[in-house]
Length: 547
Image (tube, rainbow, N blue to C red):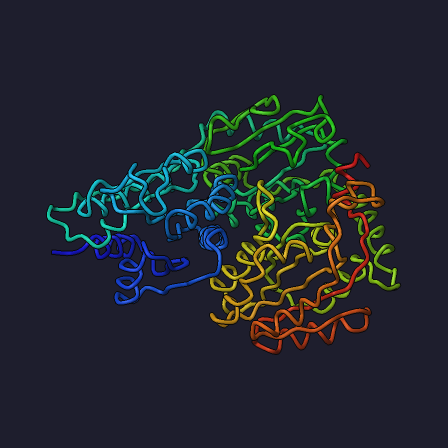
């Protein structure tokens, strides 16, 4: 008879999972040894939260659920930040925690916690199999729950004795039913097209729903058919490259002042798979003028009109909606609106402003000057993992998004430090193109032991650390003077990387940037570029302060 561990591993293999993200612990030994024996890749890391961050990033990049396996007790509690991050971004990660034996609950057992109660607020579904034989049913149920409708993480707590026990019953089978995403109502599509045709200053915003729907080509066809101006955000970044004539870059008004001004002048918005959340001021007039009309397409009905009144809400898969919109737009491309010239002018003004700032060559280096050099040297097709912090926000304002799936952000939880485990998963999924992590010195410290993970698994990511010896964003929010708990040391993170077995170097002047990046890319090793910068308030922080 098979053991619970064997049933667990066979169940996830049948669902197409060939890798487990994990950190070893007593509760997991049977499952991990079985997984290794059956040929699964074991991607072992140094912190349980980083394990879930990496699994979440893998899920977002590949658009298929990953499995994060951690031990119980403190391993489970450590993982919660990663789970909450996945929940906020709608990532269908399957999280599994071991636990004390099933017969020892409520008896003071080692590492005994009510793990389901702790995790339920940040998952779509959570359960514990009642016996070893039931594990396959619960694994398949978890997969179905994670991937149906608006996706999100799910959780199983599996006691250690269920992994080691032989199944003395027939495992109840459950095959996940094919999920058919909802199609739009043709009447809504016709109405949307009529509204778009009649608008003088329309704007299209493409968010993560485009990526999850695998609708990059649908978006391109719609954009080129209607010639409407498009802004992208979240996982939608790069779905239509910023260089495309219909694309006007970041939809985040805190990072793209052209977008902030354009939004205030627009008379109609079409939001595709993007929540009207904090990033858009919860729909406030600071972002969207009260008189503008609004069309929202989302797979989740409760999102329609949640934070802003909509004139038309379409509950549908974004890909299906884009196909229907393009089909209903007529056989010929629409004429270019006079509005487009205004948007090009705003975009040019914003780029010119950033270029002037980037001309500052003094030391310590201005972040904008660093990014101007990075734009010149990083090759086309580079994939980015963006962490948090003021140094990072300068880069998000200046670097174009050119590749679908190549712009990985922290998500609505803004989980500082997750950029490093995210970058590892980004490289795992994309072995060939360069992967660059952009982070700050404060953020890098959160999961710095994952530098060891990069070396052990031979993942040659390039880590650009903006080192201003502090928590730069908070320093600016506190006013930049007489700060509290914001100051750090100018630690030699390049030497820390060398200590873990990778490579690194210190950058203090602009002329050092290009050769250092070229050496990093050519090294085929994990490589830290420790860039000494000055703390300068980013466009993002200026926006936060009302500027």
